[in-house]
Length: 257
Image 1: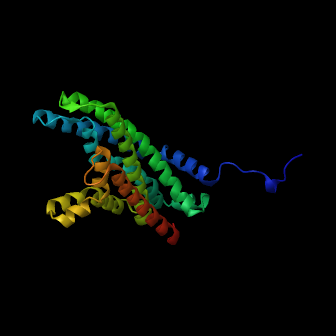
Image 2 (image 1 turned 30 degrees about the vertical axis):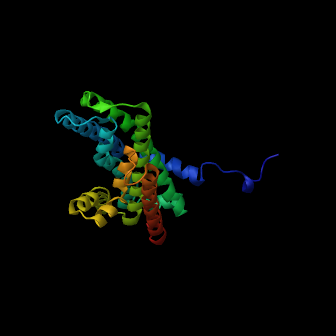
C-alpha cells in the first residue's frame, strides 16, 4: 500500500537543507579558497615575526601558543571576510532574493549562514592554531615552553574564538549588507577600538576595553585570569556574537532583499 502524496515525507528541506545549500555555495566560489590561504599565510608570517622578536630581544619564557594567539589579530580578518562575503555578495548580485525564495523563513536562512561560517572557522581555527604553534616552536628556539594541556586548550580556544568572530561578521553583514561598511565596523570594533582605548588611557576607558570582543577573546585564548576568568571572557565574546546575530536578523526581517 502506497502513501498518499499529501502525507509523503519530504527530505532535504528545513534547517538541514538550508545548511547544506550554504555549505555548497561556500565551497563553489574562489573567495573561500583565497581567504583560507590568506589565513594560513598570515598565521605563518605573523607567528614567525612574533617568535623572532621574542628570540632576538631575549624575552622571558612564555607558552608557545602565545604567538599564534597574537597572530589572530590579523588572522581573524580573512575568516571574517569569508563569512561576510557569503552575505554581502548575494546582496550585490541580487541572489539574496533567490536564497530567500528557497528558504522563506528568514531566521532559518540567517541561522544557516551563521552555522556554516562558524563550523568552517572552528575547524580552520584548530588547524591554524596547530600550524602557528609548530612555526612558533621552531622560531622561538628555546624561548618558549610547551605543555600539552595548555597547548590543547589554546588550540581549542582559538577555534572557538574564530567561530564567534564569524558569527559576528554574519550578523553585521545582514545588518549593513555592504562589504565596505561591514569591514569598517569589524575593524573598528575588533582592532581599532582596543588600540584607541588603551592609547587614551584612564580607568573608565580601560574598563570598557575589557569588555570588547577582541580583548576578552585574547584573555580567553591565553587563559589569563585577569581582567576576567577565561569562562567569563568567553561568555563576553558569546554575548557580542548573540547581539550582532539578532541585530542582523532584525534587519533581515524588516527589509526586503
